[in-house]
Image (cartoon, rainbow, N blue to C red):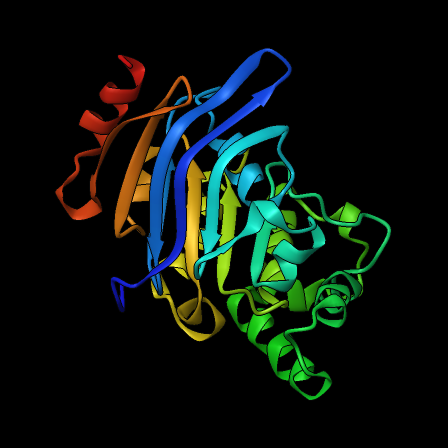
Amino acid sequence: MRTSAALLTLENLSVRYGEVRAVEAVDLTVGVGEVVSILGANGAGKSSLLRAISGEAGHVDGRVSLRDVDLLKGPRYGVARRGVAHVMEGRRVIPTLSVIDNLLLAANASRRVSRGSVPGALEEMYAYFPRLRERQSQAAGLLSGGEQQMLAIGRALMAKPDLLLLDEPSMGLAPIMIEEIYDILRARDGILGECSVLLAEQSAAVALSVSDRAYVLSRGSVVFEGQASELDAGRVAAAYLQG
């Protein structure tokens, strides 16, 4: 973590879908250059919390501030323009487009990326994920699950975000692919070294290995939080399973 200055602040954030409350009165911060994990069992509210930040959730109450600007008060498309990139659960690459076209689409759609910087950003993505270079002409829908996850992360980073939201990046992947993806997060160099990360994961051990701090959710509420270096994955898992 480079600084304690807050990039993202959630205040009394609640999310509901009809009569169902998915997130209840959550307070959370992410500092500039910081990696923060949201841990919890399936259904704890992790994905709904990330969706609330990016404008994709149901009914949202509270405040979501990015550099003191309340994202809930502007249009949904304004969230991305202010520097938030969201890699949702399930990857959601465009299957009929090639790998390189998926990457270029994100860069060309972003107002934060100059045309002259696109080739350099593309090379950086290929340095992060050499498999994408090998498959750059291949349709994204033909990639393996792990390769699609790499592409989804690479596509988000092509927009040069200030805040990267990652929802369950390890889900459904082989251990070797999980390690490869998390090695990139551990390195924190290049574009990843210039942005903050809010990471939702069920696996406490893998998330804590790359994080500065962590929040544990149970039934939509924060039940535990602390510095990642001081937390034991087993105790964290027990905290949300008992919440």
